[in-house]
Amino acid sequence: METELTPVALLALLHEVEASLGRERRARWAARVCDLDLIASGDAVLPDAETLRALMTLGPEHAGAAPAPERLILPHPRMQERAFVLAPLADIAPDWRHPLTGRSVSEMLAALPEAARTEVEIVE
Image 1 (cartoon, rainbow, N blue to C red):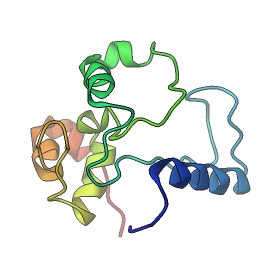
Image 2: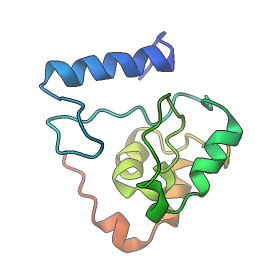
Image 3: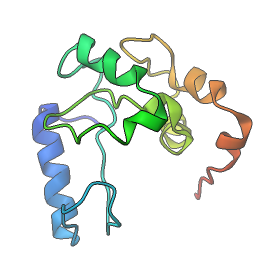
């Protein structure tokens, strides 16, 4: 989508939409009615490349132990590991490139294990 909102303002709007649908932010990874995420915003890197690189190097087993970020992090530091993010993104922006790795959405999706890719069902 295109917007004139800053990434921070867009995330605030997404949180408002979630709240209007009944989402309550009480515990990290709790069951929720709705979950809207801002995965990327053009070639923005927030808060900075060093922080993003550090978060990207955490293995999945450690990522859950990290405290919830207090500020927006873009692109999402785990997006390259998640078929449920990359498969639908590949339908709308297959050529978008990660600003730090330079890899396209299609390349990141193809790099995932086949089992992970086939677990994602795209409903049209």
